[in-house]
Image 1 (cartoon, rainbow, N blue to C red):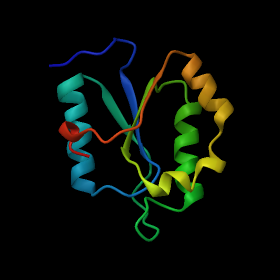
Image 2: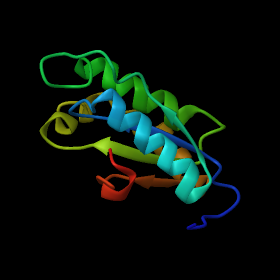
Image 3: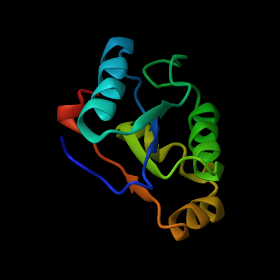
Image 4: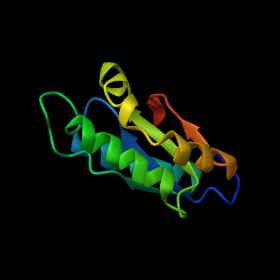
Length: 116
């Protein structure tokens, strides 16, 4: 099992662009716990707006709530791509800076072995 610092026990998982199939998301969250020993907390990405994981404002809201929350110490993006550029103007960059200054981690990539 891979280890990460003990302070990173709650991971926020979000999608700023395309949605992820429910079964793959569940498997990815399970693998986070099995492989890294952390609890994954998923944003509300189930609503579908065309091919995206919700309307632009909904996806930005999920991300902003995660960076403003005190209990999440690491963020992992399930999906990235064109849809993420559509929400940039809605991101609370001051909250993101505070999140980062708490020595938290933001990972924006598709992690294949987590199966998202």
